[in-house]
Image 1 (cartoon, helix red, strand yellow):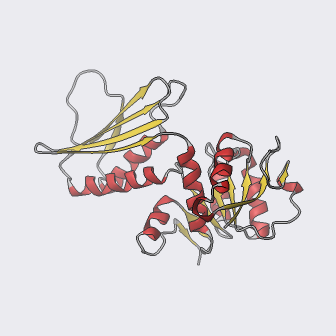
Image 2: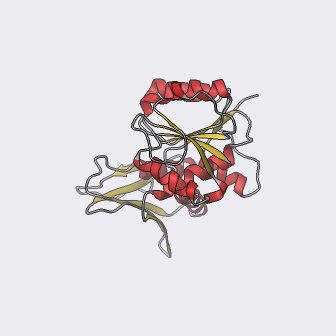
Image 3: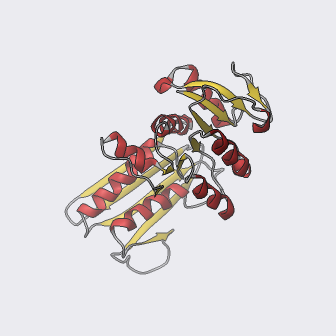
Length: 262
């Protein structure tokens, strides 16, 4: 598959370049776009407006900035190219544009591009449903430069558990006096050193405990997830897809489309 990489000179863009150079999952880099240029061995343009041809391109991967999303969506729709959005921090208006774009093209959008985290979420849901009486706690650890707590991924995990436990609710940073309620999901944040990212879901009853943990060794895992998403997205019908869609496909089930376009 041939990739157009928007944000080619950024940190994550360079990780995608490395993987494409190694032939990861058959990915090849065809074009790059970045206002800072790039030393990658492919044609690189300062902006999407400068790209005169996308012949041979199978999919766009975006690791740039959410502010360019409107122009990127217009570009992808005009060329009927699948789009993997890996940027975060979108405004409500931008999110509306993303959902609208899914009416015209296959679009992959996820709050976390790690395939391992996607698996952790599904395992947490399955385990929480299997042990409805269990108490659940989430511990997340990140480097001392991270400004938000709890992490977005920890909140995604809690939200996933709430899907199978409608009465559950997150309790971030428990303190003070008082017993935990059966419905609460405790979320605890650790900030220290240079921890890339660790997330652990602890599910325990009076007789047993199950610990589900994902540890990121470096940020290349997000580039791996983006390339895997591109491979999955090529050939799909227009619609909004996410990691759950890709996992369903990997299990030889019909792809789950968040927004199916009839």
